[in-house]
Structures are given as structure tokens and as C-alpha cells.
Length: 90
Image (cartoon, rainbow, N blue to C red; front, side, top):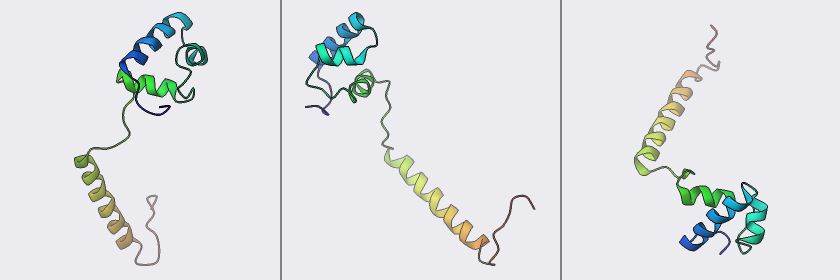
């Protein structure tokens, strides 16, 4: 329960708690939702509001990133085959 997403009832209670306690998350946790983790509560609130972005990339971005990284590794391997790394300052 501590790490699960906030329910609609909890969101409403936290909203009222924030009106009363302003941004004192410890007071909101203690008096409004004591069954939640006090460290995760602000992040869970942001996720519930939609202001906290998910750190998971969608599959097209992930595929594009993998392609870029593989091309970068290949390029780096070919430039250092001579035994001397290529410097940008030269």
C-alpha cells in the first residue's frame, strides 16, 4: 500500500491537507495519510497530478537511442584502432 499509486480518496484528502498545512509534507503524512511512506508521498502526489514525468522511455525512443549508442561505439572503436586516441584539440 505504501508504494502503490494514490487512490482518488487519498488525492482528495491530500489536497485538503495541503490547503491546511501548506507544503508541510510531514504534517500531511502524519495527519492525513499515515499509512503512506513519508519520503515517497511528494513524488506520488506529483505523479497523481501529472507533473512528475515517468522515467520510462517509450519503445521508439528506446530503439533510436540504442541505434545511436551502437553507431557511437563503432565510430569510437574505428578512431582508436591506430593506438592513439583522436583529440578534438588538434
